[in-house]
Image (cartoon, rainbow, N blue to C red; front, side, top):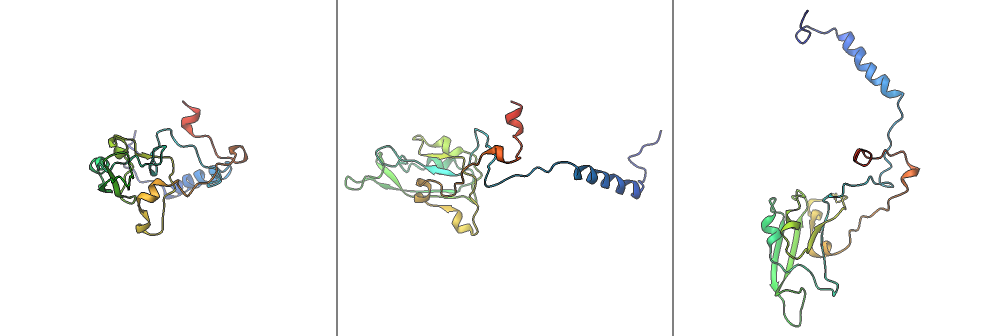
Length: 172
C-alpha cells in the first residue's frame, strides 16, 4: 500500500475534480438574500449600535461618571462631565455628560460599557448598519446617541423571498 500524501498527482485528475464540484453547483437552486428589503433575524444577545437613554421626565440617565470609558478596552469612549445647576438641569445626578463621544471605528462591541453603567444609560441595540464613507462620521456625539437610529428599513414579509431560515432557528 502506498502513501498518497507524498505521491505526485495527475493534473488532469485534479482539474476534472475541480470542474466536478462546479458542475454539481450549477444545478442547485441559488440562495438569494433579498437585503435590505428582508433582514435576517439577529441573535437575541446581538450587540450593535450604542444608544443613550433619557428618563420619562426628559432628563438624561447619564450622570457623567465615566465608568463606561474606564471599562472600555478599546478606549473609544470620551466623557467630559459638567456640574448641574438649578437653572440648567440636564440629568438627575449632580453632574451630567457635557461631551459624550464614541469612536465607532475603534469600538469592538464587547458590551463592557453597558455592563459598567450603574444607571442603564447606555445600551447596545440591534442596529448594525453603521458604515460611513469617512472616518470622522463614525465619531458619534451625544446628540446622535440620544436620537433614534436613522437607518431603519422595515423587514418585509419573509414568505415573499427565498431566504433560508437561519440554522439556530430550526435546530434549537
